[in-house]
Every structure is written in C-alpha cells, then in structure tokens.
Amino acid sequence: MIGVIAVMALTQMIGPSALPATRQALHLCLFPEDPVVDEELAAEYGISPKDEYGRYFSDLNAYLVCLQDSHADTIKRGTIWYDHYKEAFPENNNE
Image (cartoon, rainbow, N blue to C red; front, side):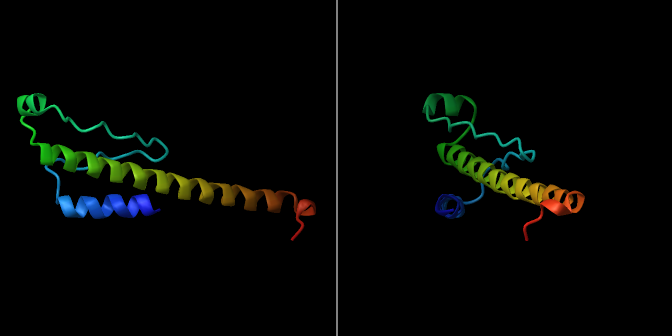
C-alpha cells in the first residue's frame, strides 16, 4: 500500500506525462516497460527523459491499480460463489 502511495505522489510531482497510462485489462496486468535511459536512443525517438520517466511512472501506477482491481474482483467473485455454495449445501454451514 505504501508503494502505491509513493508512486502516486511521485507521479503527481512529475506532472502529466506526454503519453497516457497504458490501459490494463482486468486480470491481465502487464508490468510496464522500463524507461528508455539511453539518451541517444531517446533523442532518436523524440522522447525527452522527463517524459519517458513520466510515462514509466504513469504505467507503473496503472499496473498497481490493475493489480488492486483484480484482487478486489477476485475476492468479490469468490464471495459470490461461496454464497452460492452455502445456499446449495446448507448442511455444511457452521455459522
């Protein structure tokens, strides 16, 4: 949790990125590509180092949010199926 807050704070300090965060499909969270740190290569692609780091931290934040959303969805789905189980097999309930 502290890591998420730190990344969000860092993202806010850096400011908006030139590129939007990569959208992530639920349960298909992809770790972001490392930032391009080779200045010549970045210049070749027309990327400023600040924008590249901004893109990385934005994508990293999107990755962490995706993991949190996937975790929450997994718990929600598990709860739904557990409730179905309790209804289907009331004799197994120890509550």
